[in-house]
Image (cartoon, rainbow, N blue to C red; front, top):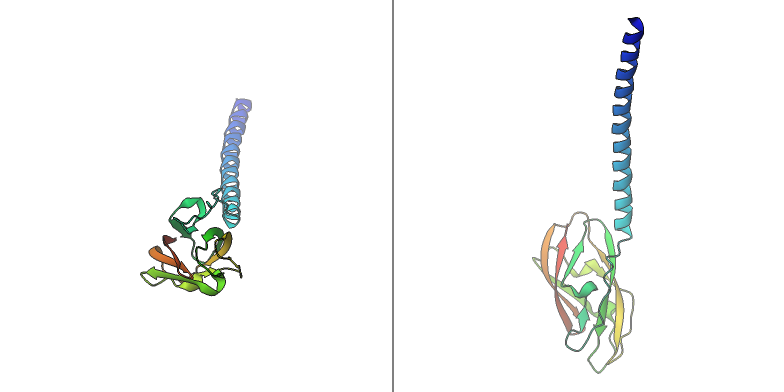
Length: 158
């Protein structure tokens, strides 16, 4: 009889150990997936190319969308396409203005390098968007103005 009791105890112990091992494995996999997801967000590429700007649509956003989603405390880079229909060259770095309503988000969230866009030329312009961690979350209706070329867009801060 003792042999049967011992074998029963062994199988109960084996089941308890198996349950604990599966729980720990689940926690480790959950942790690894969340870390890889965070890492992937840092190198985010929505797979959306920015369509080329035209005379009808002189500023285009990634994917042809009207909305940009930004995370508080994180930087996001993307490209816009700009068509200069004017008679003189423009520089988005010197002439970029972003006006939003409500005005919690200011024009200082978009940074761009010096880029010369000659008259009649279409050019991709890299943008670095920086939202401070103390900025308010919400959705903002904004107007992007580059030397008289305007585009209405929505910015969502999460």
